[in-house]
Length: 177
Image (tube, rainbow, N blue to C red):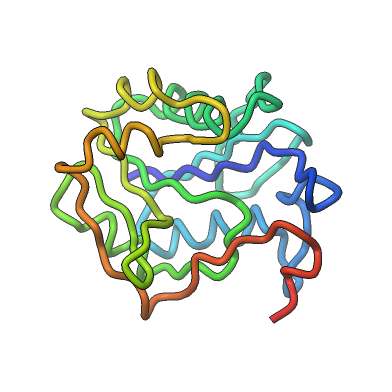
């Protein structure tokens, strides 16, 4: 199983790219890599863009089209990964838990999403047999959203309320507890 961290954005609302931002003494990108490793991913790929990143324990894939949105980062990551099931997390969700990664990865479906209070969030599992479809449909900031909606009957929803929080970081004040 491969983990994919989407970390290419400029963080316009945040005021700077979020991947290198430290939270509790650790960069957000390193937290995301550790989350995926602890969740059982034996390979982790990080998509970079607005800033160059060196990330111990992960392969870094540049996205030259990062300014076009998360969709291009997802396409770049899936293309680099090839034929492996992928658990996807954005870099700006430092409160996700490794148990959520494990649950989504073990969902018994090739498409799965974590849910919190019944609402779909991250992590998201994209089986290798769905990569081509996701690559074709990922655009702007939607990522896999359109593909998952179109294939909703195949998507396993995995309750993860007790594993952490899908709260994301949009502004510096969002890093406060």
